[in-house]
Image (tube, rainbow, N blue to C red; front, side, top):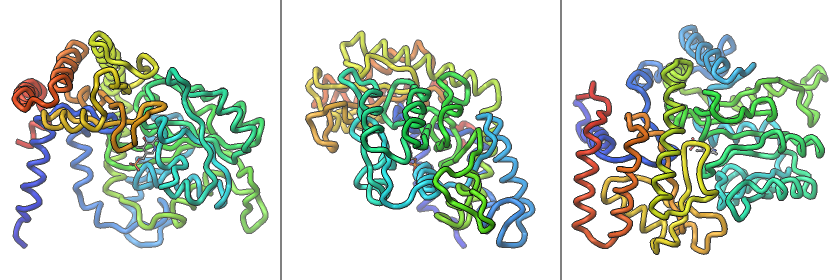
Length: 425
Ligand SMILES: *Cc1c(COP(=O)(O)O)cnc(C)c1O
C-alpha cells in the first residue's frame, strides 16, 4: 500500500495552521507529543467490549492493564472513588449519565444554551431535549448564574436531575447551593466540568465533587488530553430511583453508569484513546501541570484587563477561569463578522451569544475568548496585551484587507517565538 500522501499532506497543513495562528477557542488545547504518540498505536486494533477483567473478547490482558492504569490515575487526579474512562466524548458521557439515572420523559434542569449552557443540557436540537422534559435556568443581567431562578424552577418543576456546568461561562459555580435545593426536592446533581476540569484538578476553582452526585468531563479541553469523555464519582451511592438487580438489591450508581456506557450506549472502547488519556492523567498529576493551571488563570486575568482597557465589555465584568465572553455591541461589529475577520488574520475564536442577545445564534453579539491553548504554547501575562492589540486592530479595521493581511503576518512572526511540536520537524 502506498503512503496516503493526500491525507498526510493535509495533516501537515493542519500542523502548519496550528503553528502559525493564535488559538483562542476556549475548548481547544495542544496535547503533549506523548499523548498523541499513545493515540497513534496498535491499541486501536483491539476489541475490548466490557471492562478490565470482564471482557467479551480474548487477548485483552494488555489493554486491561492500560485501562486500569487510566482509571486509577484519573481517580487520583480528582480524588474520586470510581471512574469510567470509556465515553468517546463529553456528549457520550452525559448521555450515559442520563441513561443510568433517568427514564424518557423525566424532567431535567440545566443552564440555557443561549446563556452559556451546552447542547447536552436539554437543548431541543439534542437527544437531551428530545428524550427528556428539559427546563432551564439562565443568568442575571450582570451575567452571573441566576441561582434564585434555578431554585424557583427546581421547586416548581421538580426535575429528577439538575445539571450545572457550562460551555461559555467565565465564573465559578456555587455547587453547595445547587445541592441544597436538589436535596429539598430529591433531585440528583450532575456537574459537567468539561471546560474548567483542568483548573478544578489543580485546586484553582471550587471542587464540585463533594456537592454533586455525579461529575462528567471531556478530556481534551483544559485537561489537555486526547479527545474524549469521562464519568466520575467521589462517593458511590445506591440508585435513588429504585433500579434493582436480579436479587432485589438496589443497584449502586457506579454499576448503573458502567452499564449505561457499555452495553447501554457504546460498543468497543477506544483503547488507543484510553492509553492517551492515561498519559495525560499522569501529566496532570505533575507539578508542571499545576503551574500550567496557575498560568492559565494569570493569562486570563491579564487578557481581561487588556480588553477592558480598550473599552471592551466583558460579561460579568471579568473571569475566574480560562475564558471570557465579550459583548461587542459597543464596537459595532457582530460576533459572526468578528470571528470571520479574525480568522483571516489567523486568530481563531468563536462567535457567541451574550445574555439576552438580540441577534440570532448564527450572528450573535459576542465572542468567546479562551487562553488554555496559548498558555500551553508558552505565552505569559506580558504577551496578553500584544494579543489583544492584534484582535482590536482587526476588529477596528474589519473591512480593510491590507490591515488584516498585515496582522496575519504579525501573528505568524509573533508565534514563532512559541514553537509547537518542534520534534515533528
Ligand atoms: C464541550 C462540552 C461537552 C461536550 O464535549 P464533546 O466531547 O464535544 O462531546 C459537554 N459539556 C460541556 C459543558 C462542554 O463544554
